[in-house]
Image (cartoon, rainbow, N blue to C red; front, top):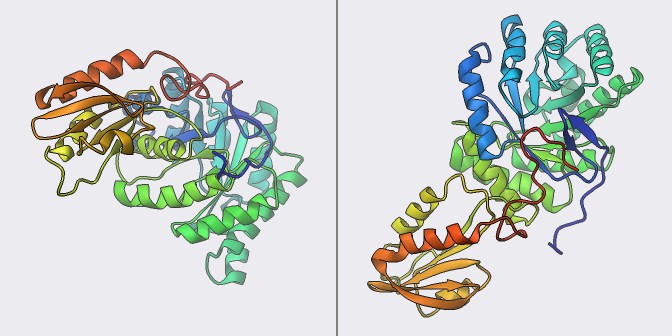
Length: 374
């Protein structure tokens, strides 16, 4: 924790009862991949995301039918909902009128008169506007001047949009400046963090399938969070959005920012390993899927060095040929047979996951779905 910069203080906003910015915890978001007009499928996916820890969800609004569907979706979910709008101010208005808690727009692709109507509706209804600047959809004037989507171009486009909304006496704003290039993303957020105190939504856009998205997001989002920059995050995965939750909470857990879910420590194996550690780690990970308690679990392939190497783990197993030891906090508890590894470990974990301090219970900073963070 000491190596992480003190988090930059930003304005505090509330989206559907969930606070972002100020001293609120980092909020984890996602976006549905379903057709928003298919209410049943969209609700099912949102509920799966809720269960996995998603705290705010975004849906695409490509037409009027999708905007109208928000009302039915909102009735059946617990998390706040953001409507993602491109080009059409009419859809933004309709989405807010049908219950969207916030909207995401890129002011550079909506006429000023339309922005003025959006701001008027958002102000009167108490909605938040996310200014979403993407490298692929920069303000045309800014893009033309810079030639290509540099970090400076992203920041200039964001500041231009901020000024536009502020001139309309509106400041319930959060910002995102995303690029598929990790370095550009990091630089853009660092620059904008020095220029404004609006809450920042972090993410690397178009990050690819799970492995690539995890790598790019861990570097991009993780670097910024380590710098003390960022108020809410979204990991973009080409695939089921529930996969984003594992990566997002993994990043937060790795930086000791929020503790949620198991942190499985396992050695890479070497010539001393005499058990199938790869299979063991896979089985344990699968068995603990969905677990909320922030337990640090070690799976080591060396009976001699394992407990010492994983001394900070809450619980672990170090295996040898046909036998292993169960240890807690680096201290040996007892010897167990190889066939007992998984049942014994899972039984011990079940006994250790009562609510408690971070490291052996539920995340004290995480709100229930839809509940405002205090």
